[in-house]
Length: 80
Image (tube, rainbow, N blue to C red; front, side, top):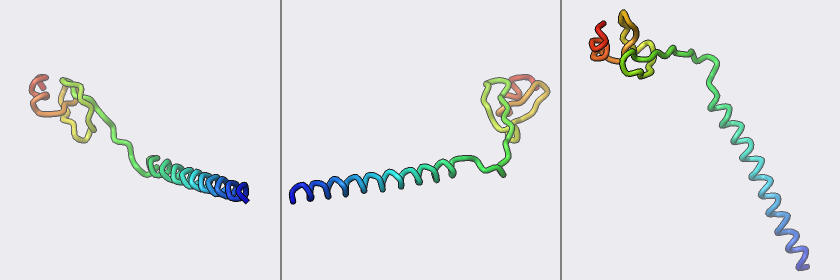
C-alpha cells in the first residue's frame, strides 16, 4: 500500500510537469507569433545627422544641401 501511494504521488507530479511543459510551449509559440512584425507594416528609411550622427526617421530629418540634420541648430552649424 505504501508503494502504491508513492507511485501515485510520483505519477501525479510527472503528469503536472508534462501538462505545464506543454502549456508553456504553446504560450511561447503564441508569443513568438505576436513579436514577429506584420507584413503589412512599411519600413521607414533612417538617416543620420551630419553633425552629431544621431539616427532618425527621414520624415523627421531636416534636409540641407550637405545632408540631413536632427535640428535647426545642427543645420546652421553645418552651414546649410
